[in-house]
Image (tube, rainbow, N blue to C red; front, side):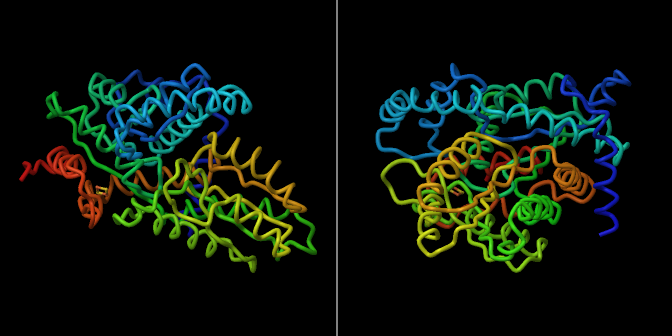
Length: 396
Ligand code: FES
């Protein structure tokens, strides 16, 4: 506990020195030195402008790791085309674009600042953003990292809870990048692919919820329903053995235990697309059903994404809070902000990476183990690739 408090205080003390214009960490700027350690931050990304929406949707709809459609090479582009206008409108309603890149860069700068202080032996640290569906892409990040001549590279998933559709897709993109390219011998790679149960991650959600609970009248506060909401997943993926649902549940359980309040809570799922069955109950249905049961005070907690994006700013704030909840007769609904640049969250990132750099493992057995019903040759070959990349074990 004392270590956690020290870590958070250290991150707090860094805050005033950070500026949005930094492109690399303070120590890289001050010393003019090449970064020694690269932190590659994986995420899906989001269109920064409405002009990027079409290509963004096209990349998602044709990524078989993310979504599987019949005759995908034709149906995927057709769906992307059809949905472009509607999705552009949604981005226009949240200010014209996704803030994921802005937040990821802020988190990366603050993280590497903290690491420079915590681990001078591996400094300077520099972050690299590797998005899956918009620039900067996976290939951009790894090309730059090689160019910078980093000696140690930590591939760090920004999805705390692993899914084969999200982190798994980014892993496959890294394997694709090195398919026709020599793996650099002078870079030591390692991988953090999941960190759902980290105590500081639970703590940041608990702190955010606690702040929001205080917006409710003290007479109803203990009965406010805490609805944790995460992006849903097709039931087909769940039945294959994707670990995402239980990892999300682990973050929920850790958050409730850190929060230590008498309030009831549930985990619900949002953002389903297409006609096939996905993990339920859906967030909007749950709001309506609870309103019918007489639950008129609700807090929504997006638990599976570390920065604001269209599903929080539009789906939760505009569609569910402003429309669904009002129509259902909910008296007060609050939406908890995502971790963004919360000092406890930056401390969580720093602790995850510092611990990993000091104690490993460089590659976990959990990552190497495929889903019991995985039939994807892509998953199989990318796990073999990571063994080779990180442990030097030649493919079997
Ligand atoms: Fe999970 Fe392939 S679908 S490892």
